[in-house]
Image (tube, rainbow, N blue to C red; front, top):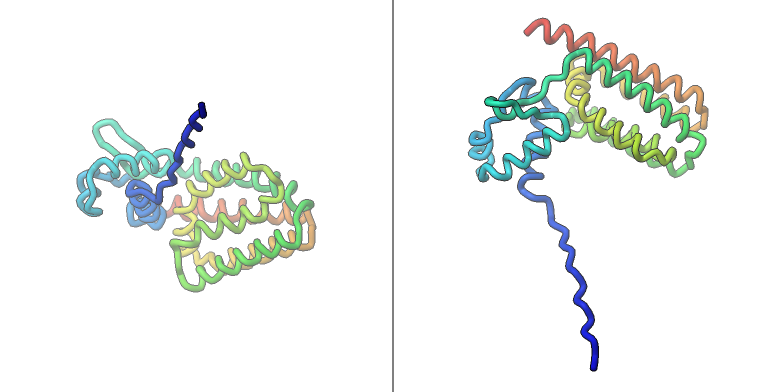
Length: 230
């Protein structure tokens, strides 16, 4: 008598779903400023705009809420979040603390391939600046910073930092355009990578701190002026 072999469980990998496509589209519209702070996101209107049912819209909004880009308000539905200026300032202070710590651990472990990978991403970021491709700025900026931090093997810290970068990305985009800060960003990214390539850990960490703090101060000042004018 033969014993039947249990059938292996099937695990299906789904391609990107409608809610995920909706989430990505709405996220980009929030980050590029098309959907503004405090703006209501009416489910029926979004469903009609994208020609879908309300169910994937609800799921997309829940995912955006988890990212901190959307807030669900009683009797108001979903609205685009507004981060108080003081909290934007706090986020940059957190970035300075966490990124300087993780870079200090990463630089001594960097290989030539790590540096080459970072340089490739930086070139793509600079190309996106030249092409005014704002949709790619935030992701490529994070990819560049992340590539410098990966040798630290601090994956939990990287996950936290990715969330912080997402929260501040919409403000960074506006700041770069309004203050013509692209040239400064390019110059400082080049200098940071050069210090990392030389394995100058202390100088790289100090430079990164100045880069983040300087960007944060300029952005917060511009944000305060912008909101005061509304």
